[in-house]
Length: 126
Image (cartoon, rainbow, N blue to C red):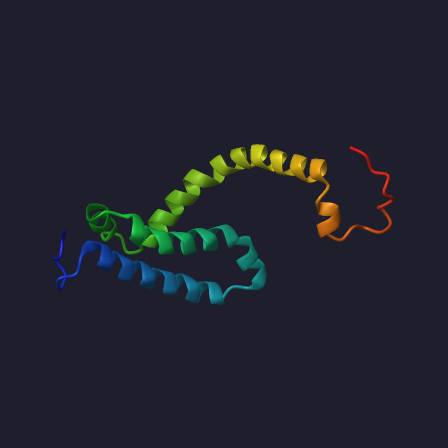
């Protein structure tokens, strides 16, 4: 365990740095117009998730490596987004198809969600 900075572990130092990075991100987000915040939802989600999970996931060695970056939260978030965005789009196609089939086949949505009155005739058959 590396305790080169005032007796604290690399993971603890990384966690502090990530918390500071997250504060900076949040302060920046608070200045953005609502429309831009919506457009940046994927980034906001990624940064928030990585801030929560990276300190719980990294080894001392990995933490020491990430400490070399000014914004390790950005480094990890960008990597995570890059790896998951395209892959998830492909997977969502399959999962989304399954979800839609379940909605149509079970009919449960008709009881849980508002229906368009002019479209609902009760005669829709799939």
